[in-house]
Length: 318
Image (cartoon, rainbow, N blue to C red; front, side, top):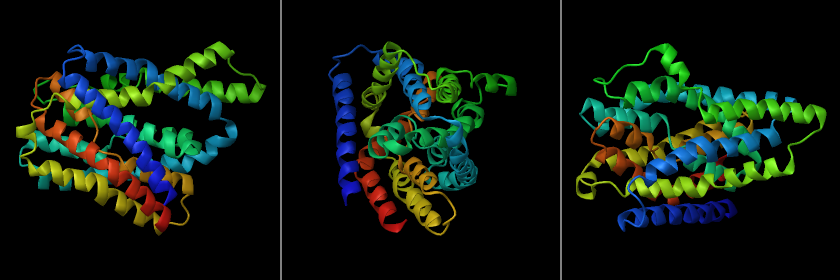
């Protein structure tokens, strides 16, 4: 039961920050563009710093081979989840564009903001491997998820070359720079100057609290009456938070050859709530995001209980 209470405590901490962000936005104690500013800080500074520091300190030649099973597991799960998500999305909505929200949410959980925060706190030893595990999912998001599912068809479609340009972003650059520096520093037994390491460490430590505040601020903009009348929101939350992770746990209980760390990464990613991209991207195109915002609010609230339960189940079954 220790993992249950450890995770529950961490979820209480994260949800408290979400609630603070929500209250600040509702009370208009922060500027209207706060979510935009925080999102840019997260994507351009805090997440890259966290990723850079993690890979510099933990990525070595010896560890590259040990991370390969996680990459393979992530790739297989993502490919399998796409048709599964398309199938279950039909149960949640008849509207073709709204179904895209569900397809995206079922395929990609909030493995980034929420996943990073939870894994870093509960399973810190495997956090570098978790970042590697997430790489195939990020690739599918940039190449297929966002441009195909979330950008309206009447908008300008991106070609392959333009989609590939999406990979040239602070997070992906920091991953490969961190990998290169990690191998280099390990080989020559050198390290960053202490002031540079401190800057990276402090900026990286801001990722979790700022991400949760941003979640609360984003959710505060929703239309509650319109949102909570849609049954698809509740169905999608149950599927995302309970059904998918339970299936993941029991499938891996039958696959003894998969390394334990890869399994933990898979369970962690599958247990996270529905993500925020289904709010951020469509809203930029003037689309109604009340459904996707409701998905985020309900799933993030319920995840405070379901994530500890899934981790406890994983501990008992695997």
